[in-house]
Structures are given as C-alpha cells and as structure tokens.
Image (cartoon, rainbow, N blue to C red; front, side):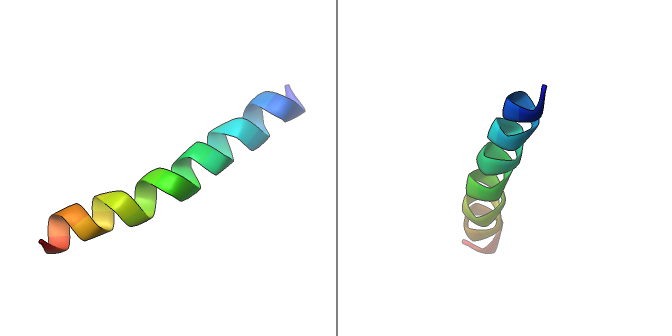
Length: 25
C-alpha cells in the first residue's frame, strides 16, 4: 500500500502544476 500511496502522491505532484498552468492560461 505504501508504494501505491507514493505513486499517487507523485502523480498528484505532477498533475497539480500542470492543472495550475492550464487554469492560468
């Protein structure tokens, strides 16, 4: 489960900045 949580965190860490940029643009 730890690996899954870490993967989710990494994905969110990558999606959040992209989503922010898209919203700003």
